[in-house]
Image (cartoon, rainbow, N blue to C red; front, side, top):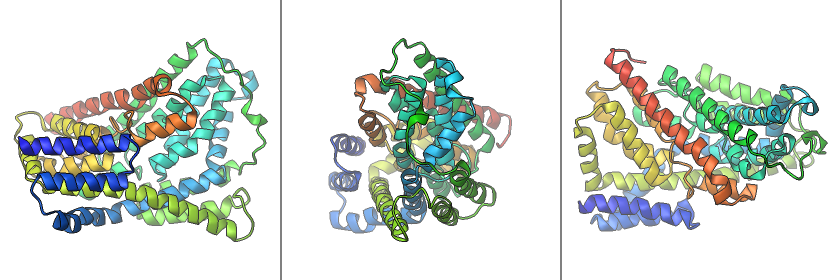
Length: 440
């Protein structure tokens, strides 16, 4: 019981410190040492051979996603490439001045979700997608006459939540689960895409009904085409994203190779839109992009080090034994285990690193397929990763200039409640398939 309490308090302390503004990079280290100390583990040996090894083991998995994905996102931010894609998608709905207010709201929400899904499907990390989306959400908000309190829900759109767990997407959840389970990013293809469309549709329907029934209007409403920013052509911004998706998801190239090709194409095709002159604008863009990516990488890597320390404690072995000895359906056990770890850590890779090793016996015994476990687990990590104390929620509120009391309720429904329901239904779907002898 003491060991279980130590693990719970260690995870709770990590969440508390991050909520109070401490960086994951050193908060995770402090909590890992606290867990080791309370578990009677040698501190120096734990630091060198467990914590650091956890970081080192994750480097091949996370380098491309965190560092190169952030660099790609930075290129699309400074060149306004993401906005070019969003604006082009918006114009497919027709001339803005001829649309009713409700049609403009629907166009804004769906366009925002599609654009974020495209960015997520092409390897841009979640935080970078969020930062890239803020100016686009504000522009759509003006075009559709949407009050500011809905901007955080638009920047954390249902499209992003859905794509984070979708098959074939080079997201941190898919990459981490693939490394731990030796599966492909396309594992659980049918069920995964059913979950993707369910979250996408339910979130947008909820936001549309909420906003369209709101009598409040913006005071500074104006057509988004009035802005003077120069954007690249749609095809210039879209081709690098399409190349990444095709090479990674269809041709099965290594994610590092696909992202490298996308970065080089983006620099070449959108060179006129990237600020600066001569060759310096390329080096400055890449320098800042990789610098931002390095920070994202170590924020996640420190959590993987923390997860490695937790796994080495005797209490974690007891947790694993308890989980695998439960007399219940293994599909539901996978769902509940990953959701609980996500709630405690607010980090998908940490939740997977803590939960999946304890669940591997179900695969070895043939009670559940690796593909089904992969997809249920990844969908489960999209549930509680955007609680009020999470970095994404805090960033969305700050950049939108909205208080939590006003802006968070629709965010919670779209990024926590709906994905949680979808993950549960996905578990039921695989459970039904398993009972019929189908391996999907």
